[in-house]
Length: 298
Image (cartoon, rainbow, N blue to C red):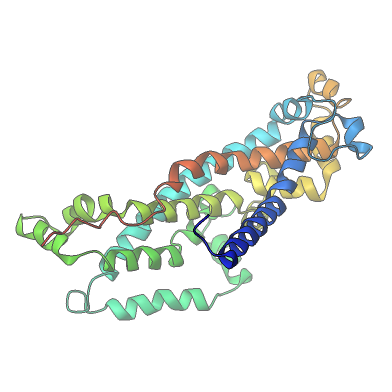
């Protein structure tokens, strides 16, 4: 800092203050929700909770984790995310790899690539999508949440452009050693594509985990709702959650004296974010590009 000019110091100071304010604006609402979830019913109703829990307790978490509706919705979201991400990655890779080749190697490349681009610019709309799911017999099933978005075209284009930027000498060396396209893809291209694959994996996971509208329109029974669709109904109509749980058993009835709609909603919203918070640190280190640098020498 001593060697920097005055204008540079002022810029760095302003930059740090500005970014700190932006970070607080994003973080403080989340901290408030977390504090409410760990506070007592009385303190929340009186508006005493800001960023620290008041009368700390875990009654809201105990209450919702013993609710069969929340546990069922959580299970649906876990199955959807696991199967959906696997299907997305499979289709992304097997579509992006041939489209990354030159027209001399794949003559129909440009036509097929533009076909996918058009699907980003133009959408059939909600009613055709609903009719397609209905008349293919996917309604009220897990596949209804996965098949309509099985190939994220934007993610596919990102991976395709990454494949096109790889040094062709890598695959040529594999072909000389007797490898085919499948072996080249599995043993050469994919291992050095970890940054891009990690990025689209996170995109797919967050997309599946946070999606709620398709659950509302494709699921006929609330028992088949994914977690976000279930939370949307609870947030819009908080009393419905208590109507569905008051008669389950006497043990849950005890917690009704300790929790409210606000504390349970806050606890459910926080639990819905936890999987993303757990997955992100493991994928974040792959976001930096440059694994290909140094692969080809000379």
